[in-house]
Length: 236
Image (cartoon, rainbow, N blue to C red; front, side, top):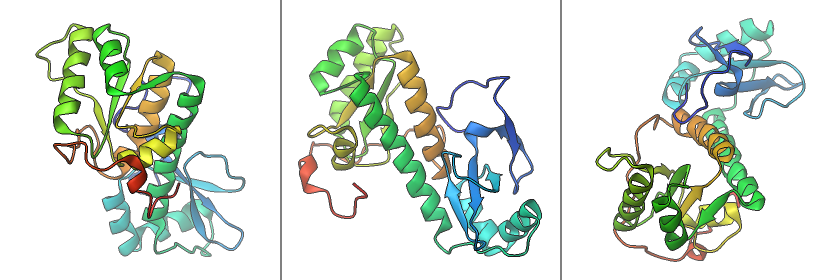
């Protein structure tokens, strides 16, 4: 199960990974959809019409399966057709789709008012024990992240536990555009249901790119450039 995913629901439908053969809740796997021309495309929200197959491996394993022809064979069996076209950039397409889903989720929570931004506001909420999930941009200052991590532990009454926020694998520029606010370096989810939704979306993405439960270190020791200076190359 991806890092940060929700607890297993006995009523959640299971699907089998066509590569590993292992079963998992559908929400924790990635659906691949077959187009009319036989082209395979990611359907991470599992909403595309037509036939689909499921995978539950990370990007490295998927790239190896593509290179060895294992994915094509598995999909040919799953779809019962030899007309399978796997794009060379399928792993990148999946990663981009998972990133988009996670960032879209944060945008929805921002509009719903279930998250906080701004180190001071987050620190106050964390010390009061009202933060359900803490997120840092990958280029957040290490010292700033540590202060908020400590505030989180104080509020939860678990000082000395090593509990930390999750580092999201994008910069503050992308994070800012995702939630529609300026210079977003840290985010705090303040509603349990919102934290569960974000945790699951972020967990799927991090798991696919190989981060799993590991906490990716922040990149900088200072706050660096403003959010508006890093827009090139973004999907936003």
